[in-house]
Amino acid sequence: MKNLLKFFLEVEKLKEMPRTGWVLRNIKNPETVAEHAFRVAILVWLLSEKKNLNIGRTIKIALVHDCCKIYSGDLPHFLYHVHSPKMRWVRLSQQEKEKRGRKKFELERKSLLKLLKFLNPRLKKEIFSYWLTYERRAIEKRTIRGGNFVEQVHRIETLIQSIEYFGANEKKAGTTWWEFTEEIVDDPLVLDFLKVIQKKFYGKEAISDKDEKELENILDFILKINKLKKMPRSIWVSMGVKNPETVGGHIFTTALMTWVLGLERKGIDLEKSLKMALCHEMPSVYTGDLITPFILPKGEKEKRKVFEKWPRLAKKEKKKIFFEDYQRERKAIERLTQKLEPTLKKEIVGLWDEYKKNLTPEALFVNQINVLAVLLEALLYQRKDKNLPIGWIWEWAFEKCECPTILKFLEELKEKFYKKSLIKKAFFKIFGIK
Amino acid sequence: MRKAKLKFEEALLNYTENFEKVKSLDRNLTNDFGFPKLNCKIENEIMAEEKFYLTKEGLEKIKKEYEELKVLRLKKIKERRPEILHSEDSNPEYFAFQEDLGLVDSKMAELKHVIEHAEVIKPPPKEKQNIAQLGALVTLEEKDGGINEFMIVSSLEANPNEGKISNLSPVGKAILGRKIGEEVLITSPIKVVYKIKKIRYHSS
Image (cartoon, each protein chain N blue to C red):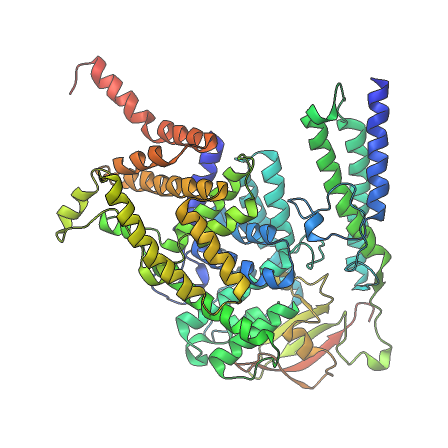
């Protein structure tokens, strides 16, 4: 458990790591690597449904595809400075591309192996083999395994993000992101999706196929989901945390924790749990990030006081608050998914509903993981601000968690974050210092 | 003990034989790693009758990987075979070993399939070497003198991070079939125009 905690603490760094490409293009508050991975995972899920791929596997690849950047940093492709005066993609000889590509691969491979040392051999092997197929270092038939598919979706997501930042405007965006995408995409479905993007933003003719509408709706959905990459979590904002994680970043952590800790929890469907983790906060696109049962006063100082303890409420009151929240969020998720293909819509709304109502073993598990992700984040913020009132999260965790693996993890958190202060307390007690 | 060993060897043989018959990696029959589960006997639609166009180096690389896996497999069986004392059901080591072996075997089967169905890309005759085809290293020039290079390979071998692009990608498609001196429009919504400066094939 100690090693798992170390692993998650390292992965948390991705939530603070801005993507280099955007930094070099002077984007203010650009998306982080974790937020990018979050939306890639969602897009991979939606497109994998149409390709009959092993969805659990492709989602996992999407979640870990950038974990290699923790120690190497977010290296640009070809170690190339994207801020070229003409804002265009790399022009290099093939030999130079190969040389730089290999160098980048080696740096990232070392970085990933450094991270994976915290995991058990099975998980280490699993993540490393996923990454190799993603990096095209392992021969794979993409129709079956999906590493290359995820790589193509990753570039599509980056292209969409570039359009969100710069608009469909050559003067602002340059040709970089289109060139970057068009030299890699060769999967028929992803190529069709690319055409739909052209139609949406550049008014080009798209495919005249029945799939076109479905792909257009997936694109609209993904554009709406982008809001979560920019939405700071209300709870941290209300508590006065500076530069807090976003909803997208939180979903990334929750999904990764669901996978890693889910391996130790027998009797749950991991693919379903992963999907549930990915959609558990989707209603926030319309409702904003709700912080009930807390009710905030107006003044900043008073706001912080509210978090000094977990609200004490009667059962009837709790039920009322839950029902009001549920109704708002239900409407939001139905609105968000209304244009998606009916089975997909049903699946997403159903998974969210299960999660919200704690209806299945998967829902129970993901709910607990959600608390764990919030607690881990809170403890990290408390390192920077010792007066941050996080007692209520512990209370919340002890109310919700019952899975032995998660309880063990909670113990590990206590050990890690409070051990030193306990030693200090003991020291002060022995020497009579108050 | 001897009985248990025999049983294990029988199971291993059975698995290997079945694996030879496995021609499909259907998603419902794969384990968490995306590899086939033991003893699945299903016909493969995806793997059947497919040709893989590879460069000579690409094929050699795959063959080398296959040979390495062969050695690794033998080593695994010799060194790491766990003893089966009671029932296999209660022997986690046995299952871990089986799973490891399964990974190696499925990887080997995949590589073997590629090797068996591979066709080495041959350079075209001299009079056609001014046309960009599969296996060509194409040098492109922009109006301002910028030089870019791509090697066009099949999807299986493509790795744009090393300058090898798939013949099915928009960039690959735009270049394929073009001659030296011709203009190529690469990017769809935002235009990038190149002139083909040079085309080279490995043996040329």
